[in-house]
Image (cartoon, rainbow, N blue to C red):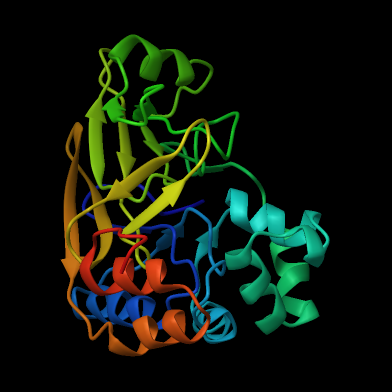
Amino acid sequence: MRGIGSDGAPIAVIADVHGNSDALRAVLADIDAQGIGPILNLGDHFSGPLAAAETAALMAAREMICIRGNHDRWLVEQAPEDMGPSDRVAYEQLQPSHLDWLRGLPATRRVGEAIFVCHGTPTSDTTYWLDRVAPTGEVQFRPRDEIEQAAEGSDAPVLLCGHTHRPRLVRLRDGRIILNPGSVGLPAYDDDHPVFHVMETGTPAASYAVLCKRGGGWDVSFRAVPYDTARMAEMADAAGRADWAQAVATGWFSPDR
């Protein structure tokens, strides 16, 4: 897209809002306070036992370049009775127009000459790019060769991904960078694919990143924005999701809260 990626023009990179409208509101206010223009949104916008419709309204009021994540895809591909509990709560809050918007989102996108955007990896919205899960459930840093193999076929100097909810920056041997901005709205979660594991950041702050080209390189800064988590945690509790309430309030995951 014209103008994006030019020298000195900062770009906000957000991902994995997951229906947390209060976290998104705090991040947008922080973006405005810094005078940052373009916003790139890497998907998983609404899914969660929180405030999907509020989140949709906030996003509709802002100019963003968006792609879809795996949960966005499941919201429009699965029948409601087949959805997981987080997707189902969001689905019941959303209007047909919101679902139509999700259907129209691309899985990946080239933004200008310099930036490639995906949710998980360039070929999968459910695969972790910078991490892997051991058979024991331990989350490990993915070996460099595997990270670079997934980057083959894209010549963009900046590769953006989300999905793991953990902020991360990796520089490839050829100088390209892969940036995960972390999650705006869900700082911890569990998953059973490929085996049961837990992702935790240890902070309830809303995470995003700022990307700016400077000379021959790219300046990246990670932002951790504090906000009042009480309302979102109460919504999760009211939906019977104590695990989400714990995650939103603390950045740690505990199924026994």
